[in-house]
Amino acid sequence: MDISEKYKNWRYKNTTLLAASLVALFYFADTPFVKNVIMQLGDLGYVGAFITGFFFVSTFTVAPAAIVLYHLADILHPVEIALLAGMGGVVGDFLIFRFLKDSVLEELKPLFLKWEGNHLKALFRTPFFAWFSPFVGAVIIASPLPDEIGISILGISKLKDWQFILLSLVLNSAGIFVIVTLARAF
View (cartoon, rainbow, N blue to C red):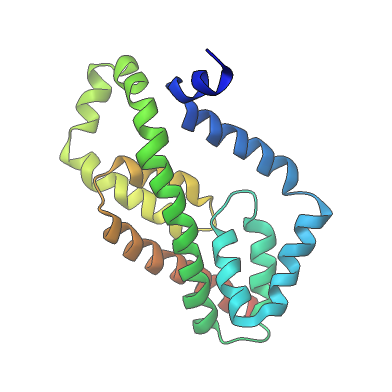
C-alpha cells in the first residue's frame, strides 16, 4: 500500500491537515511579506475592507487586520467598513465552521465519546448547555478574541448553516463597528 492510500484511509486526516495548516500559518504569518500584503489591503478601499474582514477572524491575522481597519477608519465610514468587513468575516468564519463541523469534529467525536465520563455526558445533554454554548460562542465571535474558539463552540451546538451565517454577520459587523468607531475617536 502506497502513502497516498494510507493517507486516504487514515481516520484523522482532516485533523492532521488542520494542525499542519495552523503550524504553517503560525510560521508564515509573522513574515514581512505577509505583513506587507495585509497592509496593502488598506489601500483597496471597500474591497480591502471585505478582504480584511476575512483575515480579521483568524488568530494569526487578527492583529494586522485590526491595523488595516484602523487605517480604513480614516478614509471610509464606520458603518460601511463594519458591513463589508463583517461580510468578509462571515466568509472566513463559515469556511472554518464547515471544516470543523463536517471534518474535524466528526473525526474527533469517537475520542470524546471514549473519554467522556458520566458527568461530562450529563452536562452536554442539559438544556442549559444547549442554550449556553451558542451564547458563549457568539460572545467570543463578537469580541477581538480568536473566532476559531467561538466557531468550535458553535460547531458543537445544533446551529443550521443559515443561522450561523446570520449570527456571524451580526456579531462580526458589530465587533468591527466598535473597533472602527474607537479608532476614529483616537
